[in-house]
Image 1: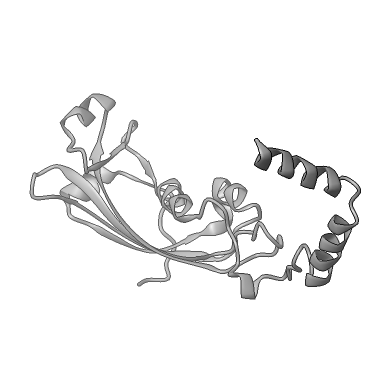
Image 2 (image 1 turned 45 degrees about the horizontal axis):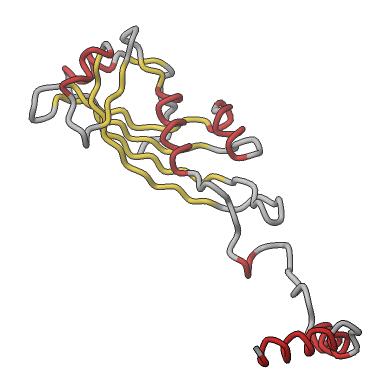
Length: 181
């Protein structure tokens, strides 16, 4: 993979006509929606390979491979956690919504209205799909150490209190009445 920065906007249909491959990096700090979804700012670079071509059907498409190291906040301890992402995707490119009608059910469609595609927005969307619904460290790695809510001593004390409960006699009497009927 190349370390060159990818362009911000491209003409995906021209790239597909020429079967071009874009290989480079994108800066995560420019992805504001991703930072908001992670609960903290995004740092670093993500590696991206985008292949524009016309598939077997002759329709323009983009296939991509994105590798990044994200750091969403753990919802248990509120500390950043490492989340390696390595995702692949494929989308059919269309110019207008009306062309999506011919898409197969298993096919993802990307509508490119003004014939310019914002690569950072495309990659940001794919990275956001990789985020877990609730980010949590594995329990043994989390900064928060959980104590059991009740110790065995607390449980024993609760049983003793139950024995000294003045209403326990009423409970026993009610149980005897139920048995007599």
